[in-house]
Image (cartoon, rainbow, N blue to C red; front, side):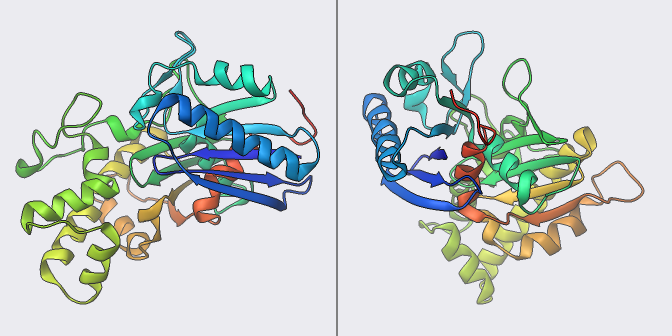
Length: 301
């Protein structure tokens, strides 16, 4: 049996999967905001799911960052208390070598490419639009990580073809300005609206207001669509994937799937665009499924 654990900025979710991929048990807790408590929370979640399984299952952990093959420390995490920390080694010390760890967007892409919305596609780009903006690549069933462990990290490139009011762009936690993440994350959408209409509003409320005909909210979503189209067009120009799968909270906005492909045509360097933009089959569960799939069936650390 396999355990998948999705370490997010707001929650840690763990799921125990049976040999056929069926869900047997689930645990969800709030993510602590410091490193030692986060390690304890992951270990306790794994141990609770071990108890539910009645055995020591393999464990895959998806994190909102990357594990550096050089420093052997976490880097690039928007849960910044993880950066510079030996998370994989600390989990091995507590749970043994049965733990594998990968970027959460890579886990998401693996899940959707295996038996989700992109099943059967040769090249899949998985996108997480949530608290941050992540990306992962699966080619012919294999996750691509690259020698620097940053393959698919489109969120920390500048917004392509920026307009005058997008330059230099909002400050990003990575130390630069105008990153795709600062515009296309949930907080990025909320901040964009706030620049036009003072006051805080969550992304779901912005979408609801736009559906009700609010002009300011509608304009914010139109800007978001154009930026998403430009960002994904740059991915298509570089990678030319068969399928782009959207996940994360903002993937639940149905209008993206109709409108964004109509816009990205003008930015993609091709006479025709056959890449499909689709919604994740497994929604919020896809990341935790992909984390579990880091271990092939029948393997044990």
